[in-house]
Length: 347
Image (tube, rainbow, N blue to C red; front, side, top):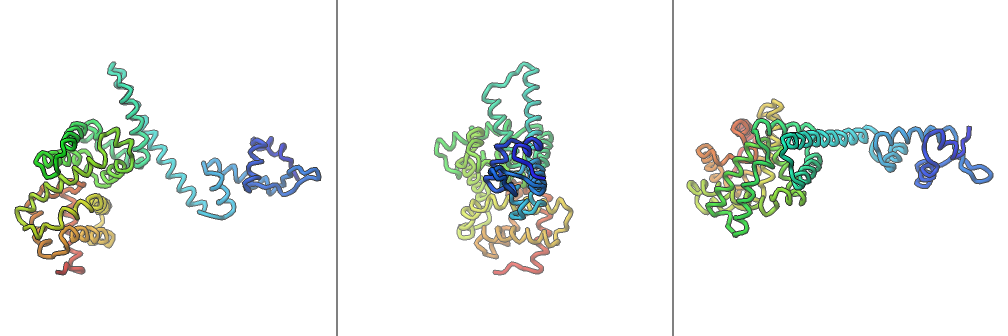
């Protein structure tokens, strides 16, 4: 059985133009031509076209369809997994949109109509959150908002305004006003977002999205300022116990590794949530990173590191921020104690 291009288009619901395009890009070439030069499609061509249409329903690009059918690139299983991930993101974005629209609807019903800026910033936030957070993570963010009875975007603006004033006045991070703002900032963020994995993604989102920086007022300069002021808070505590020679590595190393610390905290917390014992190999692998960061912060100087450990037991403020909860500290200490039996710290 041979079909002309018009007959094939009619039977499949595609346009002749589409079939011409498939021929042009090599996705579906007719197996024969008539004496007059017309395209003729046989049974194998029709079967291939049905496969193409089935894959297109998975929202694959034509290039991806060609790779799958021709056996090049990723296998079908990987492609389907990617589509599932994409759909999960769409679902998360739809849920975020529904929640925001409900919020806006509630405002309208109480005759408290939001202004245009609020509408636009809300739509922008929905787009960005769906880009960085999975559906489960968005649900977790909602849960945390309910627990805290507040949202990051409604609770943080006064702190952002205060930070901008200090930056405009060129106040250094070591200034008492900067350090006090950093304490309050970290305390509030720790309450609103105690999960280091979510905090890490939230920070990453701010770092990578200029539009979000514009909306929130929290740009790279602001984040670096609060980070440095938080380091100064810790520095003041360490100064009570350590000399300048022991402190020489701390500021630079902690600033350099600040976001890495949060990522490692998230790794360890995830494994703790899975119920893995501290001595489990997966936990130990994460704690090796933890200890490496700790060693870097203190110039790999063993006497100083041992001092710092004792300082942390006396000064709980040193553990504020980054999702470092008391339970996580206990869990990590147990795991580090096990680690040092097989891999002891060396001078």
